[in-house]
Image (cartoon, rainbow over all chains, first blue to last red):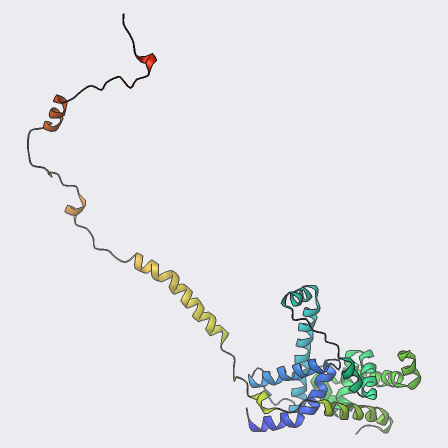
Length: 176
Length: 115
């Protein structure tokens, strides 16, 4: 792999993990798997940057696609047949974080993640890409593979909904 | 640049970003040093097909190999395989030594007793 690409990937690694974490609904283990699979795609040249968009938006698109693949695989595992196969193979595992792990997570971050989970997926994605990853709406549209108009709509609606969800009284109501 | 009204959201997301960065796994360059390319599955399938075809075809080829054609004299039965002599000599000699079979093996009702 070219040195320049490796340097870019290293610089983007923490943010890429944050994006993978968002795509996996905050599940740390799954996010690591998704990121590793995305790196594997690059190493095996199954994904190549063609220069039509910036490297960051292209790389985030690869991670998003890989997370969707992983989600489909997980859904199969959770199906009846998948559960049966898992029981037979004895490879069943609990995807939920341990109580100790929950304690470690910052309360504010947990609340944000919980509120984002209540939004439609597209709204949550565009808010993460814009506010967390500091992408423009155009770049977010490239990552999400939707039109700029659609992204703008998701962005405005998502912001309004998220503010409502983050209000203290609303947090209290949902917590109770 | 974000409008000032979005500062609250920016602050919340920035805080989450800092937390996630602390939990992010360390960068490992070996992640990018995987195999350059998977073995060509099409090539593997072609090789497997070739082997299977050869397993089927080779025995047929060897069993249907051209054999040496036998000559006519080898195929036809010999016409005069014994020295010439008197005709039916063997049959005549057996007739002379013929003995009729006894009836002692016949069952009792079939034995007729004449007074």
